[in-house]
Amino acid sequence: MKKSLLAAFCLIVVLSMVGCSKETRVNLGVKIEREGELAPVSNIKFELLPFDLPAIKKGLVLLNRPGDMPPRDSLLIVRARYEQMLVEYEGTLDVLEETERALKKIKDTRSNAYRSAFRKHEKAKKVNDESYEERNTVESEYLAAREAYEALLGDWTEKAYVGLEDTLSVRRETRKITDDYSIKSDKEGRGSIVIPGGDWWVTGRVRNPNQKYTVYFWNKKIEAGGGTLPIDLDSNTAQVVEE
Image (cartoon, rainbow, N blue to C red; front, side, top):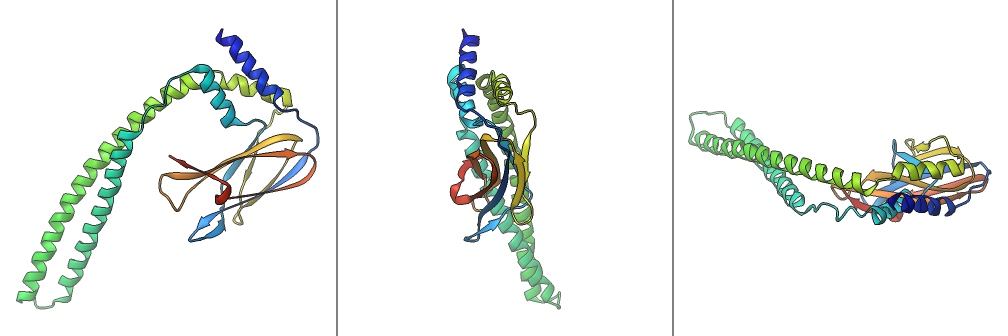
């Protein structure tokens, strides 16, 4: 039963688009927001796929019924605690460095001022040592929680995407696409490649510098009909995905 459903699904994917033979030069430009302005992104690889990969995966999830994705609530709680601990630890380092500078400024090591500064420095060192140990403990908890979540996610993914390789192979065979096509952006955030005609999806991701643990994700459909096709991507047209 599942094989027939999978075959039907592959057929739907195959019939969803009809390719053509007109080669097209794709000129890609990528920019993301940095400090309030759009700036080019270098050394980022974008794949050009002859299929809508996210849509295919979504279809397979509906077909395979793997259940709900593993929840991330407990992982996010531990991660937030770890992030807060990092901030607190950096704060103790700042205080330690400040008390050390103050201590070094006092030349008379027998003075009351020196003894007072020394006590402050020793206290700051103790607080920093305790914060360091706590940071390491929380970091270990976070790494263990992340490993456990990734194991659960891996099991879910294996069930959810049964038939993915077969589906993609059928799509490639129908379009007669045997090569992989990708563009790597240069220092100006640009790149170029010639692709066969037909419908394509430009897909790639860039780490979001404005929000930790998120990336900008693009999955833009284009039609290669010959000639030159300029494609400009930026953070305003991207989907923000949490990692």
